[in-house]
Image (cartoon, rainbow over all chains, first blue to last red; front, side, top):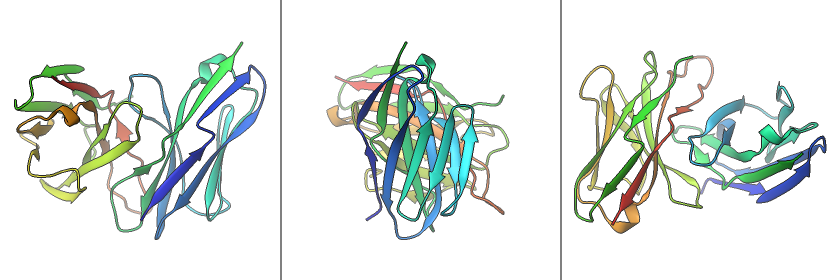
Length: 110
Length: 116
């Protein structure tokens, strides 16, 4: 069964304190791995797509990396506005659906 | 920037009533989806729709659910007889057709459905 596990469940950082979020996945075949940001009461906002092991994508303070079993979302020098839940999702080969993890709730304090 | 829109933002209904949730996907997208998120839980896939028919559905998407694209812009989810456990946030999403690369799914802001 396709499964996505994210850790930690919650993370509290001081502004400027860099850290990483983890997404482990088991899937029969990986068509793509996606990172989304979700603010309370809102829909997931697309951040990155990763397709193959070794790939990296960057956007402002965020950098996503992918191995054969996991992905990391690195946050460099975060700001309070980076506070949100970060969701990881996989698209299994042969399917349209996304399989989501439970997310990591990030709180960045000034 | 084009975006997915959903109406209403909040729907309150009595158990056993029918509800229709509406979505306007991004205009040049070809795949449309419904997901739901029960409070505090994962986002779960319900159904995908392509070329005027269901292309994939989950075990959650039983006979109580149906989807329709009544015109060139709207995409709807109907729940025939709502249950308490249908209370959740329902997200519509859309994506372009995969050609060389896999396309990301863009999500709407959601409709919060409360079944009393």
